Length: 121
Image (tube, rainbow, N blue to C red):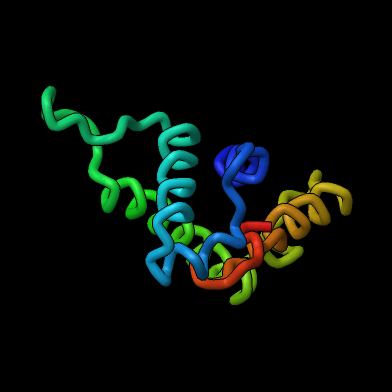
């Protein structure tokens, strides 16, 4: 959730860059890589020091995050496995049962990187 918020609030990154990134647009790729460095706290490759991540590795972090969002979405679409009322302790109130249901039903809408929508919200 914090990553999603940080990406949404990033001053130059937008999830709508997905198509431009997929088509190889240099400025879009650089913008996405900068957002990855800012949000995930990684460094760009420094050939002199031989430290940091290449551009491809930086984008892999973004793609990995988007894949994670997709997995969460798929799992939430299949529905949570909730205890039956007889499995809940007798002291569990209806409000407690509703809280379990509500927290498990939050889903993340995740299109592919090529789509222009926010993948996690």
